[in-house]
Image 1 (tube, protein in one colour):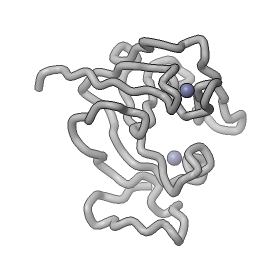
Image 2: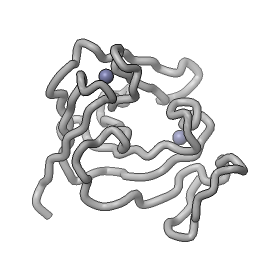
Image 3: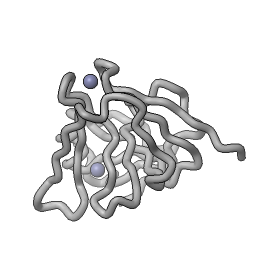
Image 4: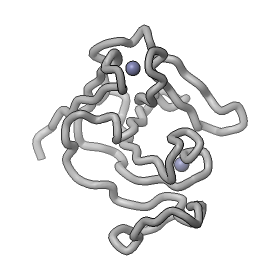
Length: 134
Ligand SMILES: [Zn+2]
Ligand SMILES: [Zn+2]
């Protein structure tokens, strides 16, 4: 498959980025940290090697938070609109991209419901379409 580049941005469009395929991971996560981080019932993230990601605008607005008690959980936002934006893993090897911040349609679909057993009881999502993992 030919390499494809998809673009994304924050809510106010000050921060913009590009990410290239192939994706290492593209999936939903229902863990409690992702619920807090997104304010929704799940996150949907894409992971890529760091070489496949670049900021194209607004890098100076990026604000990072590393959850102290977590091994790797982190979050980055645009300091102007507070929208979640991609962040590098703590080891600097990967970038985690919140899929909802993409402006282009990514190739493929999420492949799994991660931390499915941690979901809230009111998450009305049909799990039959994808494998559920913990
Ligand atoms: Zn913004
Ligand atoms: Zn999670």
